[in-house]
Image (cartoon, rainbow, N blue to C red; front, side):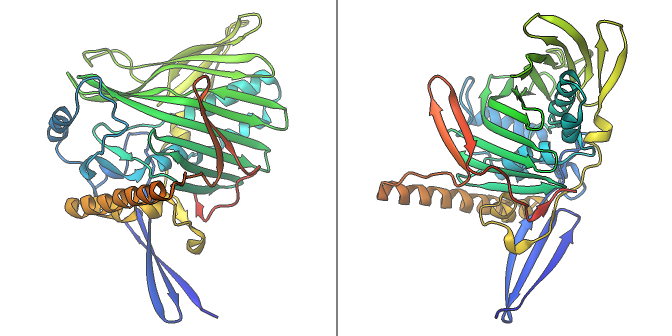
Length: 405
């Protein structure tokens, strides 16, 4: 029987190199996990170990390579524009990288209204800081990201490459909670800005209460001139199908000129959709605090504090390297991420090209054989009436070999 031993080496808390030793033969597997965006808008791209190239240089490159109104979903971003992580990881981090277990508070609310407020606070917590001028990798077809945080297990899969569609399934068997997402980002260039519209449906199910909450996601706006800035914008609706309670929120950005005014503002209301009676007014900033005001008595309470939820977050760790799938984001892009962290741009470019070329080779192989790729973890449909829909194949997500801290 082969004897295996695993040695984990960490560099600046960003990279994990796992060396598997079997029958005296060493095999090196790199799994690179990076810290999520923090409240201050910092990520590994802003740390001492990595600095994005000159901002003006990147902006001029954008103007040179795209035209106003063009669809950016097929645009291949050079490595110097990339964060050292995949979009799948960014989606996953918004669910599992939290300083407080807001998801569990949703199940523990005493009344339907309490639970709706808790779900709204959790939904706001998935809004994370972004860095202007850098973006995560576009996931390859079949790429996965599988992480556990306590009793919450999260699995993401890239179920379509053109157009890019991501499915997410998360379950907490202790709290009897299930989350299902199916998302398709559509970035558009408008001359002075880029808006990444996130289409698709998000569901959170509180199975103990027989309640399903449906919600959408704000859009990410990158303003290039006159002042470079990035912010979340758009109308958000969170509704419980069974109770008819809903929250209407508005994410507002800075003024056009970029000077003055409030930033990262969230305003809205909680109402009964059957009577249109407004129960609470919502006001605050998604990167600070969110308050609700009871319209019946004027009482105000804080329901969300970003400092407690998305500040000082740490990178996940590998608990069981042998069980990490070859489709795992942190494995697929490890060579690219490691090169970016070291600012070895030519190596990063070559490693990224290798990943993308392998994707094209697999596509050519399937086409030559007349085969259609089928997702491993989701049933996927796409209709003109309802758009993309993703249903998990399994009722529960298994424990993951990667653990969120």
